[in-house]
Amino acid sequence: MDSPAPTTDIAQPVTDAGAPAEPIVEDLLVEDVSIDGMCGVY
Amino acid sequence: MGAPDGAPTPSPAHALARPSGTSFDPALPYRLHPKVALRPERFGALAYSYDTRRLSLLKDVDLVAVVRALANAPSAGDALAAVPVSKRPAVERALARLVETGFVQPR
Amino acid sequence: MSITDLARPTAAVAAAPTLAPTPASASLQQELLRGLDAPICLTWEWTYACNLQCVHCLSSSGRRDPRELDTAQLRAVVDQLADLQVFYVNVGGGEPMTRPDFFEVLEYSVDHGVGVKFSTNGGMIDAAKARRLADLDYVDIQISLDGADAMTNAPVRGLGSYDRARRAMGHLADAGFGAFKLSVVVTRHNVGQLDSFATLAADHGAELRVTRLRPSGRGQDSWSQLHPTAAQQRDLHGWLLARPDVLTGDSFFHLAAYGQALPGLNLCGAGRVVCLIDPVGDVYACPFALHEHFRAGNVLDDGGFARVWRSSDLFTELREPDNPGACTSCGHYDACQGGCMAAKFFTGLPLDGPDPECVLGHGEAALSGVDATALPIIDNDHSKRRRLPLSIR
Image (tube, rainbow over all chains, first blue to last red; front, side, top):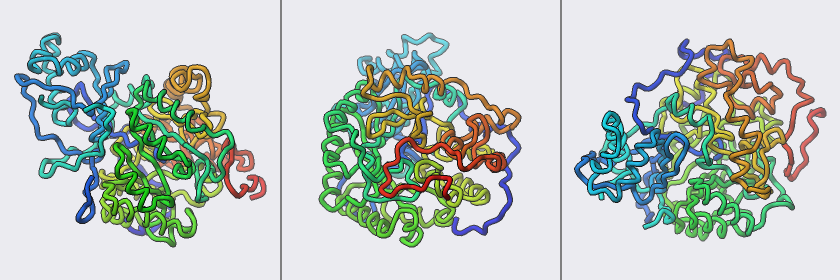
């Protein structure tokens, strides 16, 4: 994305869903945790 | 990690990690990867690999017990024998995933 | 081979299909929000001294604090963290490399099983230091840059800082350090350069990381002019969705209210998964919340860090379920959880209400009711140049 044309619209959500779509995965007893230090790496 | 010829490949451990390519066979012996720390938690354990920087949540105490027992068990199947029968398939699937993500390795 | 031989990440295995990161499941989120027995990692600021004076500095750094922990005290904290099995620390400041004992404490930490990822402006990384860093096990480096060119970077980080960062990147490459991270705070003026940042990172074999500007520290003064517009924020979300290889540290979890969550935990981990230890040993919920309201204790107190993490009133409270308050009627609260408490706090918004950058615009509406002359400010300002009192601006 380079230099998008600015607008003054307030952003509308992509869907009307109340929660983000859950990835369809088997309910495993182990889950990879995508953590990149959280905000703690500024 | 050695002088690169061109740009070194970024470690994608966090974002786009690649599976180890090893499939799980309960007849074989396994162990926790030596660079992995297993830290008990209320729900089971956290597993952190100091090698790949990956982090995994083990959501079940029986699973954690099996993982700890692997190193001394003649085969993974032996370690699994301590798990209630109804739970065994789920624990086995979780073990397979841990092998795929490099937390557990054949020994 | 022991766990305390902490390795540099191994090179990617070629040819196998990738395992793309996904957003955390609801059950994982629930477990983490209740708090862990120890942090997974934490931010540890080693000094308030800094060789730069970035306009948006979250810790208002510049001058060393006379009460800063000495070498022995830093090592004692490492021991405490090792006992708790904190996996790694995110070291920052100020500029951590200004400490004369920087390498000593770094090596002590990795030797005791606590990995170190540190954040630096690169100004002090010369060829020799780059080689020394390359020789260490488990040290990850993050170089801060807020412009893809010097002209964009300078107003935020100062004249010459772009060149110094680029030079540091070159030294690391020459020393064979391997992959490092390039870290960018997204502003109104650099959000159009995301592709350029990605290219710059790729050219150096580095990973790109982008994080959210927060109205914290000196950032409070310029936040209203620097934070991305609503439209830019929407574009950023789309760009990040298309680039799962770009790291964010869950910095933009409030964007989950758009309907599609980014990879990551998508929650505020402050006091639950992570926290901050500042240069004088104070423990805060997070680096963006250096205010008494978010201070949990001090590592020098009885019981040390473990007691603060496990039993402090603040962290106990943060581990209770959140109160949606004004967000109760919004159908998106489950996704965004009301956003970032630091962003709300320092813009004068109530903590049980919308984030100032709420994607539905609820935050913007709430800001209009705020008395901008009565905002809370950072506990201790270590800036080299004094900030003007808010009422004068």
